[in-house]
Length: 100
Length: 136
Image (cartoon, rainbow over all chains, first blue to last red; front, side, top):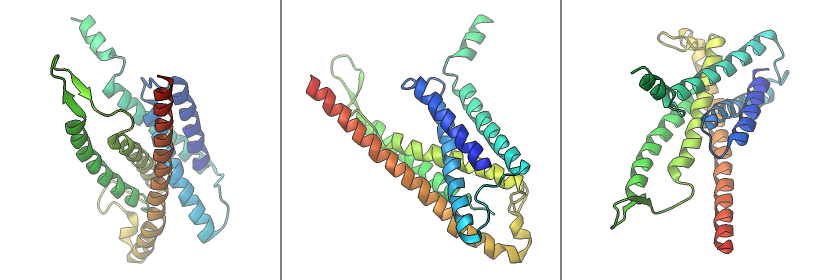
């Protein structure tokens, strides 16, 4: 399930990036790479596990769903961190100047 | 068990290579114009540092989320020896096997996808450059 959730997040992030491209002021490309990187790696993991061990390809459990939501949340947290550090809108600069 | 260690090792190598290439490119691509002293790029289009940053972001992004998954499943802990498989000698061999097979496959697959991205982006960049030249 976490593969499906991460792949969905990757597709949504890519669509959002495309609507904002080529400017990409909010560094959505980073979000796309985070989610696509994980999706590709988990795809390999799932395919190999399916080929070697057999069983179900997708793990449709509550635990796997919660894991999917958690990893997407973590990806968003990392992207927010990058956004705040890079500060493409110069928000912190404006805030600090207005308080002088 | 710890399959993300192989893409992580690749990501570390790519980060170092990218930094070295960035330094090289900044030296080569920048030229001082004689009159105004402005910095002018000699080449346009996709640089290798930019292409490597795609691979770097793919690898680090994947490694980060996979590491979280491993922590979730209790396969990685924040204290030494970090990998829970290391506590039981019987689990070490399967762990190494998983790193060698699945980990390597992950790193190779991400690199192949990145390779396709680079080829497509290069072709598109060339196409648009030629189109712009023909229009002028």
